[in-house]
Length: 86
Length: 147
Image (cartoon, rainbow over all chains, first blue to last red; front, side):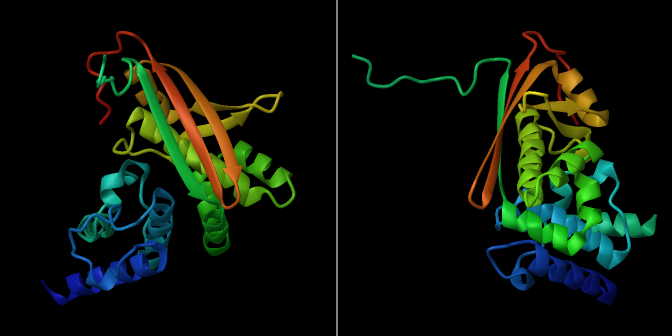
């Protein structure tokens, strides 16, 4: 894993810590852990989405507004990578 | 004597969705994200109604957010890729709430064979809740799995 991937992941973890309403520490959460099972509500996932858009200067298109896109750190990372590569 | 009765989860053609939303969390989202939050989730009609009652904005928007999520649950649309504004809570002249679907939500409902959507909203203390009851045609499109 290179440094830019680690940086991306740590920025996602920061957003989750502030907006995800998780019941465990976002910094120690497994990359593939289910965020909904970790306490994130559907409303909190909206906050996470808006905070990610602000942090990465991106906009999630409607087609990406799916439960699975925000279901884990790895899934969010994949979506951001896709949007920033476009 | 019957000792146990195995019941169907739901009769064919009936779907139910429920969601509970914390009003104070919605108020916090409005403070933090402002119009990015409200304009992303709610139609102009929903916002106009929410802003029309003094001090009730977060309460009304929380109930409407719960309604949108209840529709998503009832119709199984969490992987469809929906704009939240495609699910709109309307108000009839008698004050009762209803639902209007647009865009992909409308397409998905049509594909599923949705005949009616009945909505009930409630709030108490810091929580707003919504229940949505959907009736589907008896023989919906056999290819009705919404992507």
